[in-house]
Amino acid sequence: MRCISGSFRRRALLNWVTLVVTLMSAAPVPAVDPPVRPEFAPAEIKRILEFSQLGAVPPDPTNRVADSLEAAQFGQRLFFSRWLASDMNTSCATCHMPERYFTDGDRVGRGVGVGTRNTPTLINSAYQRWQFWDGRSDTLWSQALHPIETPHEMNGSRVSAVLMVASDERLRADYERVFGALPDLSSAVRFPRGARPGADAGEAAKTAWHGMAEQDRESVNQIFSHLGKALAAYERKLVGRGAAFDRFVDGLREGNPEKQQAISAAAIRGLRLFIGEAGCRNCHFGSRFSSGEFHDTSVPPADGGVPRDAGRFDGVRKLRDDPFNAAGRFSDDPKGALAERTMAASAPPESWGQFKVPSLRNVAKTAPYMHEGQFATLRDVVRFYSTRENAVPAGHHPQETILRPLRLTNEQIDDLVAFLETLTDQQIADPQWLKPPD
Ligand code: HEC
Ligand code: HEC
Image (cartoon, rainbow, N blue to C red; front, side):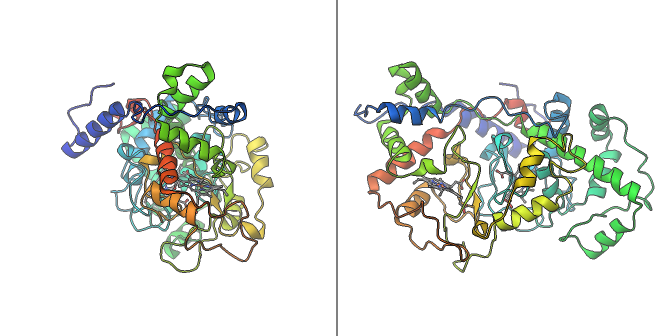
């Protein structure tokens, strides 16, 4: 592990030390129960092997700097910078804290204001087909542009962001190394601070934006898209490895009984439920334990009222309207497979109130759960699947038929939780990426 520089503030230092210690102590927990280890049938083994460890991060041809080290380093600086926000005090890391597996432990995100949705982890986000709970972004780089301008998150603007990079010596050097020379942005008349478009922008911001020359708006958008691409290059470094479960799967594949001891007998019973009777694998499958698609689990809204969040239904419209989507003019592959997928995305009536099936890797570290952080613990989530107590189907569409009360025993609930706890990675990135750059 890399040495931690002494220049950090005390609290930050403590956080990093805690993180390193947590990661180091998260070694596979040896089985404590007596070795009543069920033999898996060949069909079960086949299912379990489908959960094998993640492969390499998939390429993103819409971002030509996706795998550039310089871009990732620039992105890292942007990620931890507090100056992209209107309060000069909120960064991506305010909500996506490395020491909390890139979440915030809060029910909903809190930045310049208070949001309505729970902060997902960024670990392995580069593997996702869709970003956000409603999938309104189709690439990591277009996703990264939203929080900068979202009023309750960073409340910034694309013009201010671009000017900030241009005026900071280090950021400017980083930028130019990756994307080439910045144009002359020195005229405050041509580039009014705070200018931005968008339905959630204030009147002054919108007027200023639409008062700009088209050419100037275009070059701001271009630079802004580059900031997103650098942030994405950084996020592509956040790849988890070394979960006890992966060791167990290796053991199963290799017929190595010692490796199979990496998870407890309770976790093995939970796994068997997960792939069998409990039906979890219908939606949580593959290396990420997610279909990558959208469903309505009928989880009751946090405030107890009727569901008001349209989820995927609105997400598809926003995705189509986003000039930064994979098919748009800022994409480096606007006719490619990602663009085609975006053009094909549809929002049938039943998509109202559907949310993305989250990955379950590292889930034990990312409480609270569900899109509004409705549940405080994994036990609460599993209990909900078991009883379906207070389930409120969203909208007027036919109810999800896959989910029915499972009526699990307390021991079965414990077993499922024990299994979910084996999905925690020992390493969530090379340590150099887990702190602000020097
Ligand atoms: C105020 C807290 C906050 C800040 C600041 C913030 N985020 Fe987020 N982030 C969230 C929340 C909440 C969501 C989910 C929102 C939704 O789905 O509508 C999210 C979603 C995401 C996702 C999608 C993950 C997934 O699994 O769908 C990515 C990637 C992401 N943020 C990256 C960033 C980056 C990069 C920045 C800085 C430019 C940033 N975030 C700033 C709270 C925040
Ligand atoms: C019909 C598809 C489906 C099935 C079956 C399913 N899930 Fe989910 N799961 C989802 C969706 C969708 C969400 C997000 C729901 C939301 O936020 O509104 C979710 C959320 C979760 C979460 C919270 C993760 C987080 O980061 O917030 C956990 C844990 C979970 N599921 C575990 C399970 C387990 C265990 C089972 C089996 C008992 C199961 N799921 C069955 C679709 C499904």
